[in-house]
Length: 111
Image 1: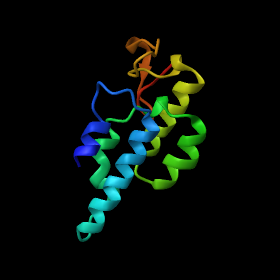
Image 2 (image 1 turned 90 degrees about the vertical axis):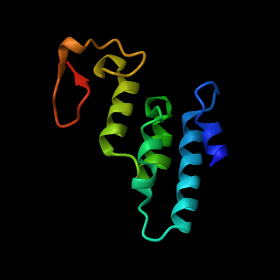
Image 3 (image 1 turned 90 degrees about the horizontal axis):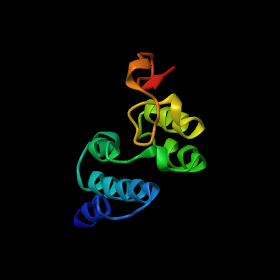
Image 4 (image 1 turned 60 degrees about the vertical axis):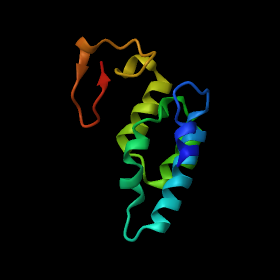
């Protein structure tokens, strides 16, 4: 658990896919020690700390998506940002202004 805290420390320059894989390994270990624990539930708070838009699209599709622990809308927003940063608001580096945001099935998109 201490290693996981170190991996998620804000002042360390660690790739987001490394953080994700560390979270998965920790979560699987935690769930193995607990009875009837859901990995997705266990990792919910850690998933919110990962900047998925910084993970390569191929890794999002081949590594992250198959785990089932990341909500689809987070992956869609990450991929949309990578395709066109102006299409998404609320992500650091996105030029999309809040004034033009619309609420769709997948939040945080704008026109």
